[in-house]
Amino acid sequence: MRRNTEHSWGSLARFFHWAVVALVVIQVPLGFWMVEVYETYTETYAEDQLPLVLRTNMVHHTIGFLILILAIARLSWRLANPTPGLPQGLATYQRLLARTTHVVLYILLFLYPLTGWAALSAYEGEFPIYFFSIDSMPRIVPQVPEGSMFDYEFFGDIHKFFWKLGAALLGLHIAGAFWHEYVRHDGVLSRMLRGQRTGSDTV
Ligand code: HEM
Ligand code: HEM
Image (cartoon, rainbow, N blue to C red; front, side, top):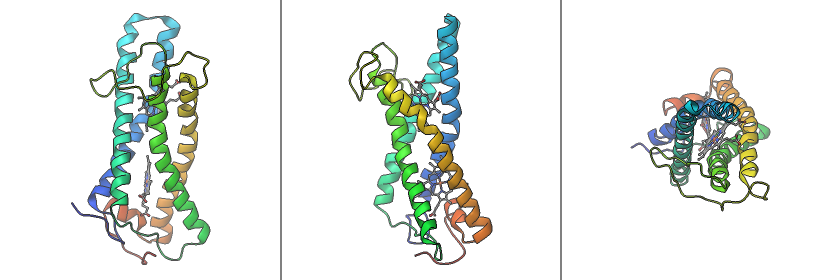
């Protein structure tokens, strides 16, 4: 397993990055679909919709937990390794923008699964919290009646609100990656894709 160096990302770090991207690409539309399926089910009381409600929840929760596990593994691996620096010659505001975007993306990778998990944990009724075929994952906050301070809605609203921040940051992050590749030609995207880079030295 190739580790990171001060100039390149190792294979495990790159695997973590692109595995999370692939899961997030599925997870966000799935989240909206799951909510839609649930709303149709509660509005029409169509019993034949219940298996789809449970299946969409099962996949959404499971992918969410996988993202959480990958985020923990990724951050631990990052802390145990050297990290390639940003390319030389960037303005202070550009370095700050890149670093802040990365930090907030990391925070969202934890906040998302944790608030989803907390929302279902706080729910007073019986609703499964899935991880693959396990349907009773432990609760991480106490069950409370609706209308209490830290109820389902409190965590659910945080969970729903932050996708907009996430989407804006991802737009910025992706634009940044392409700017490095096609305007600055400093190899930042290729070192995340292939682990090697061409271009100016890092600092
Ligand atoms: C990175 C991981 C996750 C992402 C990106 C994500 C994303 C989303 C999105 C986009 C929605 C739809 C929001 C809306 O309708 O406005 C949603 C809903 C939901 N997600 Fe997740 N989710 C993640 C992890 C989880 C996990 C681990 C759980 C539970 C174990 C979970 C439980 C829920 C629930 C209960 C809702 C419905 C919220 C409501 O309608 O009040 N999510 N999620
Ligand atoms: C869910 C989507 C994504 C998330 C959560 C994410 C998150 C991150 C984070 C946190 C870092 C910092 C790595 C670190 O310093 O440990 C990073 C680096 C990077 N990301 Fe993403 N990213 C996503 C999607 C993308 C996409 C779609 C691209 C390309 C089009 C991309 C290109 C890069 C590049 C090139 C780097 C390396 C920056 C460097 O070498 O300094 N990312 N990403």
